[in-house]
Length: 584
Image (cartoon, rainbow, N blue to C red; front, side, top):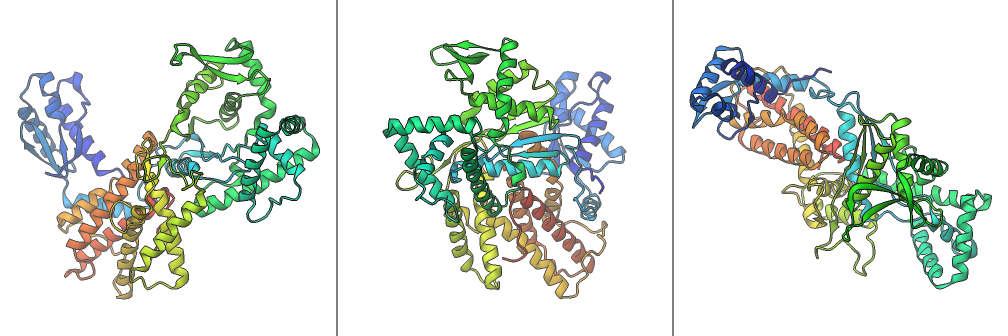
């Protein structure tokens, strides 16, 4: 694999060098401020931005910079515009060579810009004995995309699914199961049955003090390692893991049982965590509980907000488990970056956990710990998405709905697929529609779950991108069927149609887009890029005949653009976790 330097990076380097030659030595390396332009390929605003500092007219400085660019061997043709802008056009030959270079590399010329990083990503985190619901959607999808992108850029990614598999609720549930052996909960509908049993156990716990006492005793039995209680608990965990995996497989999520990082894993570490915090003076007694405090974190009443590491009753809070988890990820996994893909409501909790961990020496300064927050999935009424009776929407029900709508939408087109192929495409389109609708929205914002809009064949949808990929594959199949040689060398001497130029420049932006996603942890940037690429390809397809091109060289160059577009779309869709069907 070879790294291909992006055209924009080449242009920036050339303008920076030219600008350095005409500026005083102390301003060497001034930012050339290069961006895409609708007046040329790029525009450089650096001369205009720095002119006042050197006491020169902006247009004069821009002209001097353009003269240097023209005299040197550079990838651009400059033109001074307006008060001191530089319009920059890339020669057709340079763009054709760039297309050829990316096409020749199995990784599209992408550089491993995150090589050497070890990134732990904590995401999804469903609860044992409870069905996955709409509340798990965003963490699961966003976390998985970040895992894919960072790994693609060379980071060693350690996926962690911090499953809720421990706590007082299990004493209550196991006691109820033990007292109601007639109520079956294992088998195909195990999670629905367990959900119902959990609600029944909660109701009895609230209504019957004697049952509540027995449930508390069962918690003690679980925590002390009682064999029968542990056996039931293990069955609950195994049934839940199988149900979670079925959802992950359906969603195309990378998580496997090997990534499970249950709360129970840290039971033996919690007392040590508390003892160390007390010894260091970080955790102190507060009304019988052991708490840590973060400077500047106060409640509405002005009182410091506590991070409870051990409760009054001797039980451990979530904070103790999160601190033990963080310490292990640094010490055992040697993480250089730790991402917690958890909803925005937990922002204060993670701020305090990270602060305490740094003060305790468990989170060194050279390890970045980041909370990756996200907004809420809303219903059509603008409120958190619920069922008609106000219940939580099961994730599988939501996916069923999307696949059904995609099936109906696709059936209206003349697709020419067998029934088996059609069903595979409908599944890919429906699941992809849900994932793309989530990922194409700014991560921190809420969004409305609108299945009709999600599966639309036009507009910024996953189905539109999948169709764009299928269209590219169709053209390449038709070329092969017609005996047209695919893979013929690109002729860089041929001119570029404006639509070819726009497509080639867009294709060259994948690397910068992925680096942007890795830095900002915002998948919508990749979704937006792919939508822009699909539109650029549509314009190219509409304006530039490919198979009917009247010149063999032109046809070969345009087929190369088709190939690179298809591979770029497929790569981008895969990084978003979407299937890219060859036929639709």
